[in-house]
Image 1 (cartoon, one colour):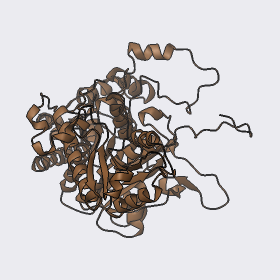
Image 2 (tube, helix red, strand yellow):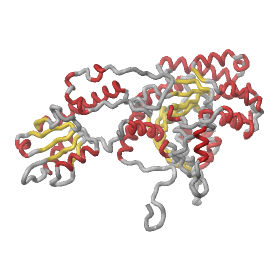
Image 3 (cartoon, helix red, strand yellow):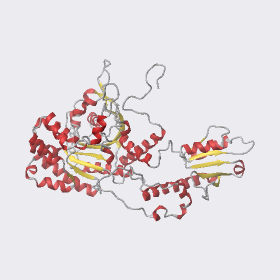
Image 4 (cartoon, helix red, strand yellow):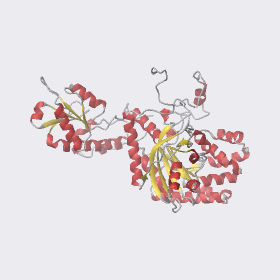
Length: 551
């Protein structure tokens, strides 16, 4: 769409507008994450969306090139924040904080190549939880992983995700034992971190041809970094004499042993995988690192596959290819990790110049989580998020001489609002009944309160549950005395909520299709479990159990 000025009316590359139905789903994700953060004692903070350029400089390794620098206007040189971690470290150092559990939900900015439909954005939300302070080893780290587990279980992913864990000191120890020169450890680490996107042969080629590593050293690294498991893998590392003799390895393995022990206390080991390929490219990590992935995180066509080759062979659009081009249709690009973090004990000290304040934390990528949730909902017979959370639509109808009852509709709405019930009515004095029903149906409103002249004269209104099947005894609604309306609406909303939860649990609707982890629970639902309470039998027809969709 081109306005009179001649420029194209659109959002910048890597950004998007969010309409009502998408905002509802995103807010539900925020609320779920925020509730878990509060449960674990988090306090929220906020920091400026831009920082002094020197605050961000030198903290992100190879990713520093993705920082958005603001134009020099003759004052302080500033950059948009790349993440919420470095600003948090600056916050802790500046205010001389010794201990804090903080959470922060805000936008960050990265000049990465976008793939909007896969949640890979240039402007996106992060939800961070960090624990700062000197505590006994691995206790805060274990709680962070417990928080990760609670968030994804609360989102309904039912264990179908994997929390990949590793330790910087274990990686550094392996590199030292294998003979990687000290000045190449970070650059080789960034190559290893690509093993989730590239086969080992390609990663090795990058190490040797681009990073200048000896091929024999690369082969030694390959023996270890392709391993994954649990405590069994830790035991295998401990049994290797060359690794066990390395001081960095000793420290890393002791930490991982403690971590697994503590996670068992938290009942949080189910989705955890000790993955030696996990490296995390950011320079500030010093200990435990982790990343949460799903099947949707991986590309549909891994680099080097036939499908990837076919994609590359497709004719390109005219004009010069650009890193601004959206890669949503690129089969070699997946959603990526949906959460990541780790321990960064030295970052605060970079700003304070005093003693270190050890920190560990996690960052959830809400836009990537949203893309997976939205795709799942679309797969369920085209079901999409609602535009709003309205519970009741107040309507009126009548015959000849019908005046629309606008003041009566307003009074009923006010009665519901005053009781905390979410309600709406149509802004027409004499609306057609079909238009009122259409407005309610378009927004997925579960109940309608219908005013009629005769019913109103008797102090009653009709309460109707939307979407009931033909032949249902309450298809046309029930009469409710106006003084009892609020209590009846609340009762039925609670019944509907419980029924939806039972339907979800029985039919597996909360299972996120295409997501798998270390352990997957399967099995047929118990038909009796769908409705254990006969008192809610009648509203059951309002919710049609949908089969688990296939991705």
